[in-house]
Length: 143
Image (cartoon, rainbow, N blue to C red; front, side):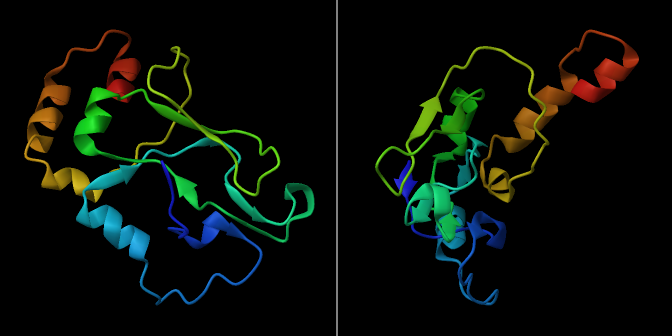
């Protein structure tokens, strides 16, 4: 968890100047260099505001959680929640490594950094071999 002071994409900012799209994104390069993935979030997208939250003119997602692929494999259900700000222009972030099971559809996103891990092919191979219970539709969906 860190206040990186950079956004990854233009949609992580509301208001203000987002800069040139040709500007080097140091956070993206740093994440690629260290083979880490963004853990995502739930609730409010923005973690920082210029001024008071209710009428802030600029909001950004500057604080985020990143993890190595091996950490993510150990804690596959880990989730991040952005909480409400209390007397700060940054919001608190909650990391839950073992949330209670509840179905929440999250779209699959392939991370290119996974290819750098030698175990990637084995994980994919084992996932395709794993048996799935349910109707043919459920089996296809879970595969």
